[in-house]
Image 1 (cartoon, chains in turn blue, green):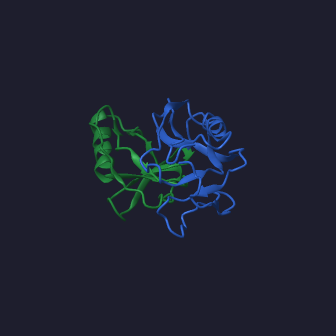
Image 2 (cartoon, one colour; image 1 turned 90 degrees about the horizontal axis):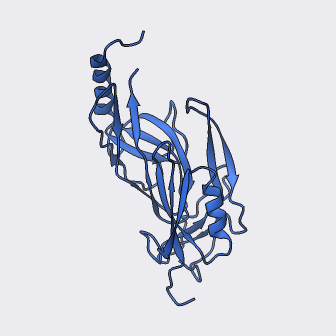
Image 3 (cartoon, chains in turn green, yellow; image 1 turned 45 degrees about the vertical axis):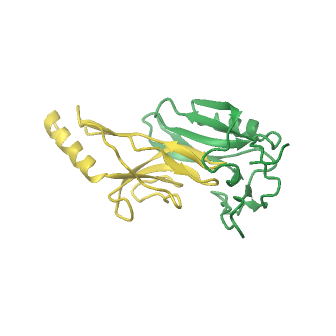
Length: 130
Length: 111
């Protein structure tokens, strides 16, 4: 790929019942990641749309990238009250990998697994493909 | 006892609106206690609509969420920084791969 080529695409998610929306930017250069991310998102969101044009999002090419461990999924009763939660693992070999922003020297921003507390594996920006 | 008049219900909604001036996102689901506020997040003004028919809806501006953060809850606070936790709810959760945005609205209905 060309130097500084943006390989992320915008993913827009919407919950038709609550009107909540989330917009994220997912790297397509990592094989299978976009597919795993979208499959996971569809477990929770009514609609998931993937942009057709490269888009690095508000953090730009040099921003951080994280391959999520997965996402908690709230369980609700018929009245919409939260009764519990399940955790859905992402199901990708890079899940739990953090690529710091280019300018984040000695970066300590790697997130932790929401359940186990395990810290994400940090990989320095070289070849992060943002 | 249920409140019998819309006038009184609207009055209580107005009190809720007056108290809940700022909104924020959390990584845990708030309940009787506050959820864990996302690190570095900017609280948004609640931006309440008009009180009518025993209800009002808050439509805060989109929240900027950093790469690696997970959204699980939405809560009202009394101030733009610090302040008191007043109410909250679980939302459709999402772990963010890159810096992105999350938008939520909340309707309070007095019965």
